[in-house]
Length: 243
Picture 1 (cartoon, rainbow, N blue to C red):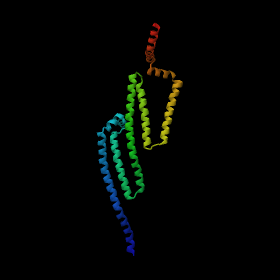
Picture 2: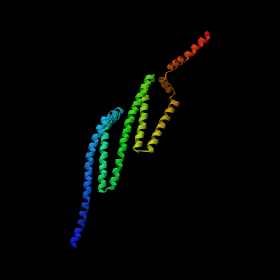
Picture 3: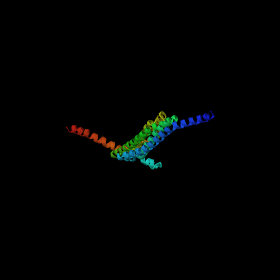
Picture 4: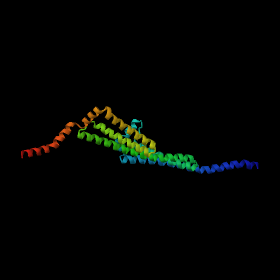
């Protein structure tokens, strides 16, 4: 009886260990396979993005320069590869924790896994949005130079920053960061800037606004245009008077 009493707890422990070892083996296999697959996927994604010149797009959009200024040596293409790498690793962790029966850790890592694709899409939005903002800025500057409007660089920069603000707002909303708070804060700031400019032009900046408009649209050009438009009328009046 005493021997059976001593053996029963040991037997229960051995049963638990025997039941746990297969789950541990599955978890280890999932982690190793996920790690190897993640490395291969990162290499393939980086090669594919560079093959379609995605790195050229991000470089022209200014994202790579922004990362360099922040002390990050990797470019946007490498960051995409890292995100794909961790996405697969985290998915392997979900499988491993699920095999081990750690439901709390499984739910936590699953939330992170669901966030990574949203982050990748947000980066794509930022890349194309930044490129489009620079394109619009260049178009505005070129148009201002062609029509003779001064301060075209300022107008181009204003257009670029306005588009970038909307792009960042869309990216944050896609990542579900801030939600309505970020949207309302952006609208409040935008309304405040517009109101401040309106008050500045209306109250204390009349002379400056007049000088600025005169620089952009000189009156000499308008007078010349009006004279050219009135030239046919004057010619017809002269002909009638001769008759």
